[in-house]
Length: 204
Image (cartoon, rainbow, N blue to C red; front, side, top):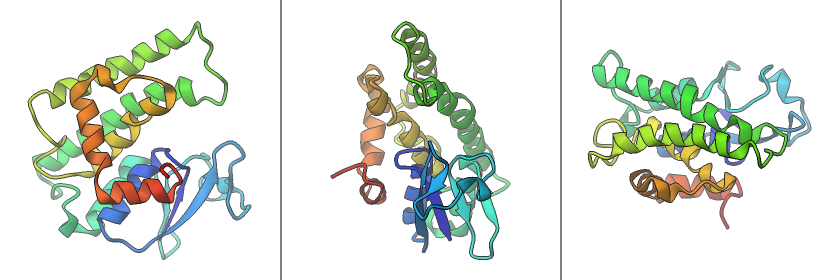
């Protein structure tokens, strides 16, 4: 398998999941601005939509969109327990959370990563959109749970970690949401997370 990634992008969640699932895979970095890979290839030939993650399977098929790729990786390695079993209510809850992260939390950061510097006058409104979503997650974690679904790390945790960690890149103080801040620190301390971040050049 090959994971096409951009350092720190939502593909980081897939990268961590692949390591936690003990999968054999290659990495190919994508320049999100030029839409070229590190080998000089046109990334749009891999994904016409032009964004990561893309997981290319050994047989040549490709999977796109973070929630779908994450669930595929989890299902390849059931012993890693990264997702509840299919057809269970817990699996539906996982899909519920993955879709919230993708459609609401992930997209709320769009003004910060549009390719055009965010004007000072527009920043408060953009931050408030992010804050509204973060407050929802903070409320979920306020009951003392360590993970979003069940008692073990799931791919939803990896996705939330990746997106919430963007606060550190765009200058939003995670300390406003202490439960979420502790969650990010907890997931970030996992060996697979540390290894993936180091491999992507995000840590020294």
